[in-house]
Image (cartoon, rainbow, N blue to C red; front, side, top):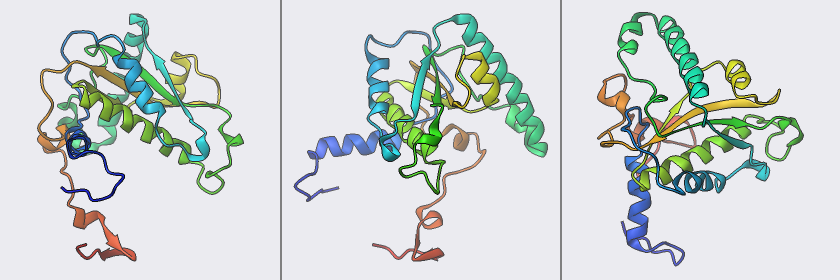
Length: 222
């Protein structure tokens, strides 16, 4: 990897960026212990530096500090986990063997949501209103990469009913929770995505996802 652009970072920093991307994991297993002072704020700061359509910055982060509130969120997620298993049919038993969240074990739990009154933001959303969600996903990826670079695990939990979670967290009508984010110390990072290690599925090759000019026209090697 030899970047020739005059705007490129130093080589060691480039390699660090790619390493964080390559070794980022959706973490479900945490060990006891708090984050270091300032870490959570740095991760949220990284998220807040994410790109957003029309600079609408649709993301909001709710830090769950009340243990009873965390327990309610965990109970609801577990209820949705069971419903997910029922919807999976033949793979239900296999799914129930998977660990899908670490809400009670991690150092910090965040509920991440989209703001209310999003319809007033038209720039970049006139034909694709879902770009607010895309923007928030970019912010969460920034959070993930910053956490991984500092050796902290993060896991995105999406098994919840948005209306129910909105009520639990006192979010305004029209807002939309998109993630329960578990953050904390880990013994180790998975050597590959957990669902790949558990043989639930596997990462596709670039040739499966990269086309040229038309859908399903394989891209030629650059």
